[in-house]
Image 1 (cartoon, rainbow, N blue to C red):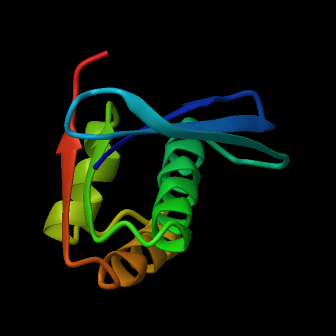
Image 2 (image 1 turned 180 degrees about the vertical axis):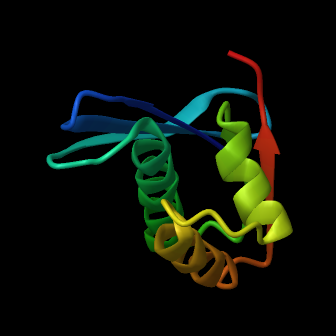
Length: 109
């Protein structure tokens, strides 16, 4: 199952994600709004977290997370220390341990 996470930023964010099956069809979509977000990087990290929580609630065992934010993907995959998103990345890594198989990839816009 693939999850594409996108967000728009202006201190208040709209978080959206789409889960697609192997056939490429959209199975589940979701979106939420959150206020008082400090940066686009934080917005992307929170959006990814929303996708992880939804996948966990849907009991999806295998997941490929896609993001166009290379800083975020590097922070998750390589455990890079980024002060701005450190806590969110640690939470996302902890959530990731609940899946049988999970991969994080950077995609182009």
